[in-house]
Image (cartoon, helix red, strand yellow):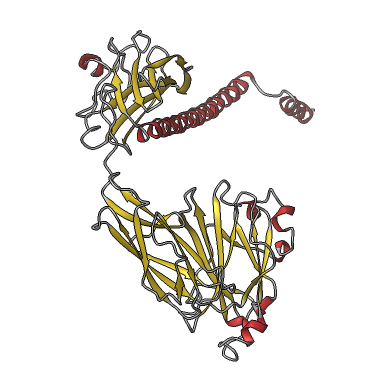
Length: 497
């Protein structure tokens, strides 16, 4: 009976659940853990927001500086700073500006970070004068913003036209300071800019100096005077200044189309470029200047199939001391590289090039080299409106015995930049047109060897976004590792009419 009572008491204790003390202890522990987790999450969120503010301010500062810099660099007539008539409030990181900078606040305000950002003040303004307009960069402290306004000028009076004042457009927000420095504008053609930003408790200061292309005064009351051109006579070929330099010309099969055209320009404005005499060092049987030896344009027809070099001279008729020359190196390539069609290249289009084995067998290279021995070369140039060219990139490669491409004259290195070796899938006629959104096709000049290790045929495809907006020359030729001086005929594609 006693045993039964003890068992009943034990069962009662087991079924009784948690005591109040136990529940309080558990709730306290959970509360502590909850506070710890909430604190951790809160700290992480604050850190993220803080870092995000930092990045946003730096991005806004860089964008603002880029916009202001573009306007300053191209100033034509003058640059002028009109500071605020009432000292602007300062709550900025650059409270003590560097020597030479014009502060927008008093020294007392500048030394205090307690200055209220809500105080009102007048605007400060940086004015950039061009020949037909002014750009007004306006700092409005009351709004913590920078605005841009373009005003159109009357060419006769130089004043803003009656209807010429433009609308203000927002250039930057979160701005607490705008400090131009014009102290070296006339001596060094340099304008310094300091812009302070603040968002919440985060501050950022951007400082940069911009060098102007033109020599301009620091006020609109002084007329801009263009720098004087040095006196001299220059020779141009395809819009490029080649004075005292070298022009390389590659002969083509048609003897009536090996033509070169040179022009001259006399700097300084004192003499007439059309009053000039041209001459050439080659014999008349080798080069025909087509009867015109005076003027600012000189046309030459190369008649010889063996000439390798000659010189072209020009001299002013009004001043015999003004003279110049250019050397022309003439290449007589072996025409073994053939193209499938018209040399014009559209974005997304594929062209085929191949090595003509019949031409190779009939050339002096007969029995010395096979198709697989040739190295492919590609070069890309942009073409300006004047015809001058700028190198964009080049690459050379050949197919190895293992079917893989070998890059460079030593057989090492990999393609980069604007070139990309493509898989066989773009070797067809449509090429990148089938995949217009794929960056592999869209942003590169894709190339592919079609005939495996025979190295015989190459397809090249222009991506849809390959250097969009630029006029391009894309040249392809063949070389030989064992004969570094050898160069085949060049096939040049172009993206303009």
